[in-house]
Image (cartoon, rainbow, N blue to C red; front, side, top):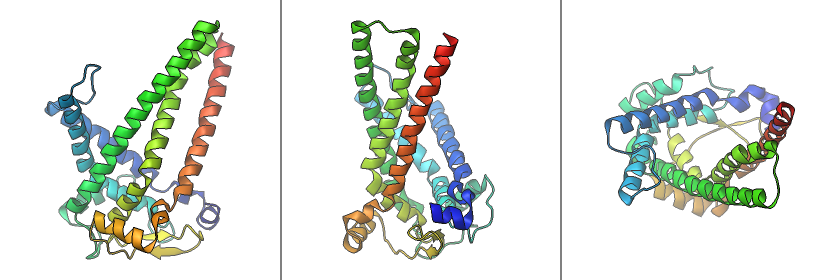
Length: 272
């Protein structure tokens, strides 16, 4: 991070941020449109059934399929070296995603995997991430609310603490859910990213050194071949390359949560 920031400037660490928001918007919009015109439920009621869960997960899967080409274009924009690329527009990922679907306007080699080959790993990762994060979030929130109710019964709590107990557990539960899902699915995400980038003629930064660029020369035939090749040539640790950035990300996330709690508590005390 230091070397890339020194050689390319701080802007290089934020590349692809705009396209990430665009893909998030496409995902949310697609989910809303599909749920409006189909009986697939966007939210699960408290009295859910297996049919409702199946329909809800099917909605998520269809959403990931629609957003997949734009996700692929956004991923390329995020990892491509700042040294050799032009300044992309905020909607370039939309144009390149559409071009990927119709097969026009996107430079690629014969090693580019068709979107059909990317569908299963993309949907698998998305649904597993959603399931794991949802379960962890509900479990952590339940535990935090149970502890909060026990503390309220044993000791009198002021209004400031009551407000914190009402809102802060949601943030903690969301953080824990995202952390667990990202850590558990990191090997699958590594495979997914390699499959999406292969054959796109993307030049990436050498993150081990921070001042060189590297071409993508992989020749995976699909998800299974990618897993076997990484295991054979790089070992099990090959699935966890770049995991240090996840550690840094969530360390900063913890710091932001603690800072938020301090500021929120201070503001509530001043209002009170």
